[in-house]
Length: 236
Image (cartoon, rainbow, N blue to C red; front, top):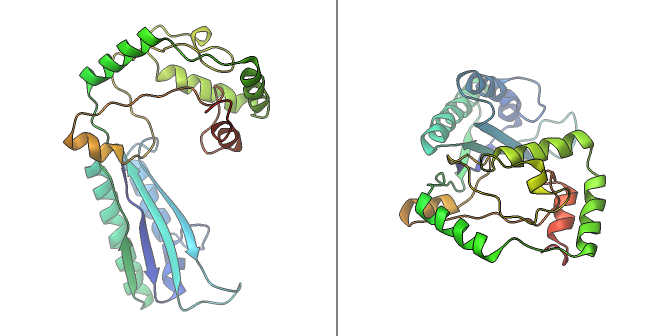
């Protein structure tokens, strides 16, 4: 999966408004997003943004504005297609509003290239070593974190873990709070909706990845529960 952080800087805030992202009034960039969603699967391709500078006071059009975009998709060519549309929208918005714009391309990465040989070897060695073992204190702390997660969110997270596991893996195999078992690989590689520069490495050298239990089952990514678990000595 390739991540493309891009800054679009404008010489007049009218251009930022005409792109319509981040809650602004018109729909230039929103229209592009809708087009992408209609032609591409919304679950695997996405644009995210934040307005990093939009002025100093409300109801005042500033001379300068800036927005930061991420474009993410399973394959690099898909990102390039969406990114190309974004550039056209920015250019068109500048022409329509009589302003100028600059683009600061920060970075990008390729998708992860799976390697079945390394993956099978890693899972074999992990099974020989056995799964992690957690203390009663660690289990209790993880349970407290789980209790602070809405039940429907917790259930969704556990189901996603099951979907990425091998055939025949049940909820009982995962455990209630912290998984202490080695979960077998699925028959086919599945896409994890996340970005990583490891994808670049995998394109030039054989690469293997593993996941381990360092937070309670069902914990949503980017949540405070994930931060608390990852920053705790018991679980890390």
